[in-house]
Image 1 (cartoon, rainbow, N blue to C red):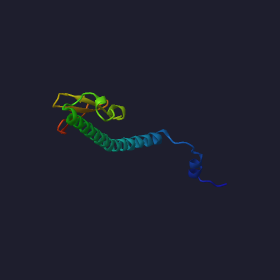
Image 2 (cartoon, rainbow, N blue to C red):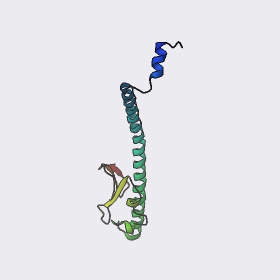
Image 3 (cartoon, one colour):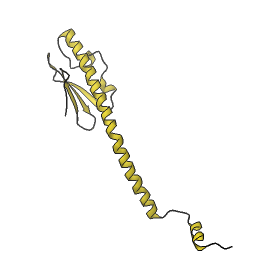
Image 4 (cartoon, rainbow, N blue to C red):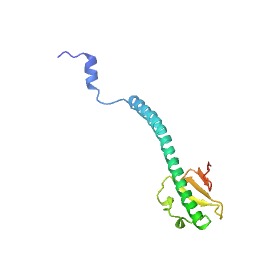
Length: 127
């Protein structure tokens, strides 16, 4: 049986060495970081688009109420829509600065402290 020493040495090798494992882990970590970063931006844009649509729906409901009663409301139960805080997992909503002629609707990104404010004219500002 004539086996060369190189072939014999390779046939006895059964595991990866520590440096090989470390290199694979580093490469995997870099690829995961790039993937997560690229995945988050479109997701955040989608969350914001959903918040803008919700703000618009709340404003329409407030305007309908204003046309009917001549005043805005600060209570979700008075509006003809469901409270968006019960369905939206990304933003929390609040009716603020409610007087007979003015209104602010705030959408705050949960756990981040940033968001959108819409006034009674439909103008949205970021904070």
